[in-house]
Image (tube, rainbow, N blue to C red):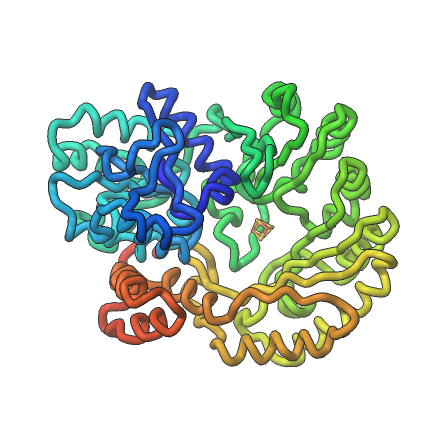
Length: 471
Ligand code: SF4
């Protein structure tokens, strides 16, 4: 079970931990391998990445199941395989090399750029596909026979057989919920935190979001009694995970019970309308030790939030800011996107003026905006929308920073790397080949730009995909 980012990130991934657990329950001796913290030192020492369990070099495993979270981690996957002496491109591997099977969050959105590096992928929820697929691997006498079996699984995508035609993503049965941690890892980013799902999916319809209602039937709830029964006594920190966890109808009593038991609790995401109307949520999180109250606004103005179908209004955001101040939070943080379709400088000016209002409402709590450039994703209504442009995004970031100087902190995500993410998200295997060329050239932004610009436009989109056609 390989994770193409360092240990501290991989061990904070609930999906990675959960699938590893289920594979082990299948009777397979799965071991964990992460991208080393300092790959160049490992390269200089000619050391292959080692498994956590038995310090076995990665290239000694017959099959490597990789969890890929997002597009830019493709570079980590290439690096991880190369460090192990495994040719990153499938076409360059031989019969003595391990098989590479890929899954993870990227499989819901934009898996095609990773196609050149894998033998197969399992798209979507992998609880009922990854463990038996790995069992089949050990029961099959040849790679071809294994692929014959695998092809019958929901969500199985085999690039050499399917080209760019992706199958619909798999959906696991509800009885397997909730995913939960197998380790309390002190050195993970979410240090020693027991993670478990309070729900899966989302019932809302934001037009930019992969987790919207149309994905695998929307929101699937886990009952609080079941959640509480799974929290181990030794877990002092509990993270409730779910795209729409703050919409769980029984969240407040669940939080109350966890906080009363003396635990620190955090939620993976908060909706401003829910926090504004259910004031106990912010109160209980603060009581359990939280110092930052974070909500998402996404669109820079009321007009854009309406077109994105983000049901968050200025009124809700202002009420959240006031709660942050009243409850003694240190920071009120708002996630925002810049460069969404149809955005103009006037929307940014509205954001500046409104953020200043938030600052007044938040009292002693500082205001911070986490600002990411918009990147169109597959399986969403905004799939195929263009990237706003690096210069446009950078100019609007500067306009925002200038307008908010002294009033709020702006934490921008790089426009350049967002453009790379966009190309990887919207492209197919040809863009994966460009990623390999960029990595070979050194992996700096200039290398990516050169490699991506060299992709022949005639080889790009549209690709055949039932999910796209059904949009
Ligand atoms: S952005 Fe959030 S609220 Fe909107 S569909 Fe996605 S998960 Fe749901």
